[in-house]
Length: 257
Ligand code: 13P
Image (cartoon, rainbow, N blue to C red; front, side):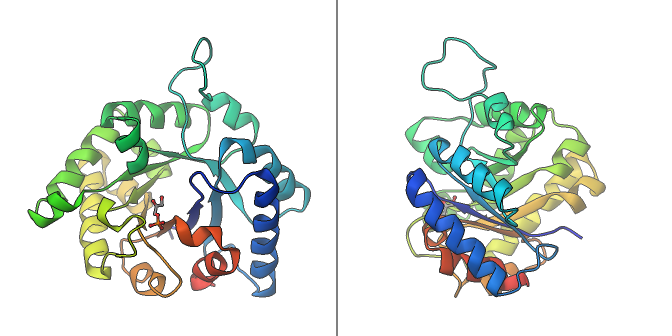
């Protein structure tokens, strides 16, 4: 009874004016297709500057859409120029915060320890972290992807309670599949997502392992989504490029309806 989460990660795309058009089109497309929100949850992870606009649309029109941010500061407040706190996001009724995306790890040198701290501040503020893990191509070629990802899992979940782990979302995003058009096979996605769930059971128990949602991300399109989403340990998708096109993203969300 894990409700799959189909989340669009807009990355640094769509200003707040463009966001309005995309969210409205997405909502209309879902409505026309009789989207059933009890079967899958739709969400968009938007730039900070879009959050207030998206909040107004979602709350004003009661859209069946959650929204979130793509990063957060580990600090509460103070002299951290350019940063955004978890409380600031919670005040905008944000549901989800992506932490540890591979682009943050690569371009901002984010470590597993920092990502663990970010997950903790997101949880403390009453929101749900979407914690990203995934290996690069050289690790996959060496056949080390499962132990590599499990080592990331151990660090990013360090110190979290079973209840906390059960409530969050883990996104398995192999770096070689991000933005490359080279989607993982359903078997590849299942292998790692299944291994993550088993590790969660070892770390904090079976109940949390049964509850935690594990997404696949990396070049997901409406054509590739169904076979991957059908895997037993895959509970939705984190979608980059394809989420910028509301009709294409709607097709991905509607897979479960
Ligand atoms: P693409 O779907 O564009 O490959 O991006 C995946 C991703 O990084 C989502 O967070």
